[in-house]
Amino acid sequence: MKYIKFFLVGILFGIVMSKAEIISWYRIYEMFKFQSFHMYGIIGSAIMIGMISMFLFKKKVVKTFEGKEIHVAPKKVGMYRNLLGGILFGLGWALAGACPGPMFVLVGKGVVSILVVIFGATAGVLLYGVLKDKLPH
Amino acid sequence: MEFITQAWAWYVAGPLIAFIMFLLYYFGEKFGVSSNLETFCSIGGAGKFVDYFKIDWKQNIWNLIFVAGAITGGFIASQWLSPSDVVALNPQTVKDLSEIGIHNAGETYLPNEIFSIETMLTLKGFLILLIAGIMVGFGARWAGGCTSGHAIVGLSNLEIPSLISVIGFFIGGLVMTWFILPLIF
Image (cartoon, rainbow over all chains, first blue to last red; front, side, top):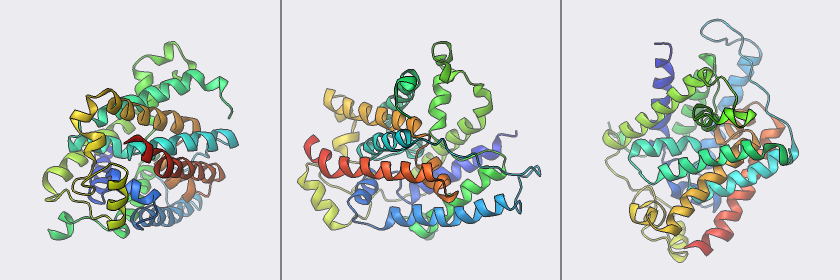
């Protein structure tokens, strides 16, 4: 039962991704062509409001529903990993027109071919795990 | 109902995404979708061969449930909340796409030239989908996060690694969109 809340938040996520057309390949293409404000508005406003959440977490104004302090884990630091990993991710993002969240939402939309992308993404993660120690970070 | 069935504006979607992130932290977890791909590998037994995947994946069940919800949400939205599949694109975008071989842009959410079953069953079409996926998965874990973990959470939290990663996302995305996509179709 403790998992039901995550299922419900996931449903909201899937609906928002669908209704705001974030799962549309064209919206990603358009973003990288600088031909629409839509995606910039979405990401920008999410970050703006996200900053307020983070501030409230840090000041301990907001705690978890169980009353525990919320610590947002810092990201792994490394110029190579962030930049090179980021560039590789960006190439895939613009080609697939979907990042990991929307990929799953598209499954719900009934897009069969997205399963190949998800399979590829899992294979990519596996490959990263295997090659990790040989890569610059 | 029309405010639900029409396409949602950015100023509706952006705050809702921030709200989703807030809820996940409020429930004691975090916001990051690409971690689930690691969990898939761990469940599949990759931990036997690669230490990186030796994790107690049961701690990540909540995130798999979140993904199951996302799939369900996509189903609900497409079945009952979306009378139209048309994406209102900038006419310039439609023209640019037609010039690189992607036609009827915006009539549906996804281009047939990439996502139709017929395309998937060709070698070239299959490889495009597969390679795009590999780059997303490999890149996300190398960078330490994807759009959710880096762009939304990381930038909200003023993280320098996330800023560098998002700059990387854009370098890769711009190179693909402006220089590689025109060569593919």
